[in-house]
Length: 84
Image (cartoon, rainbow, N blue to C red; front, side, top):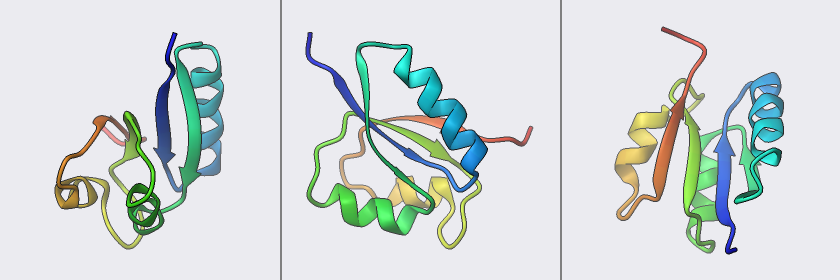
């Protein structure tokens, strides 16, 4: 089975830990990298192929949804947030 390559873009360390632990329990998913801000993720996505992004909408510098709008051909995205 080919794994789904995913990244986590989240600025809260506890949320990264929760997401990473959740993903580890799903054998079809593989966390390739985690990022504390969208700017770093943008640079990474220029050279890597990713199938899925777990994306916090409240990020420093560049908000999650604004980041998503910058991607020409975005992968599937699951929005994460601690807010209502």
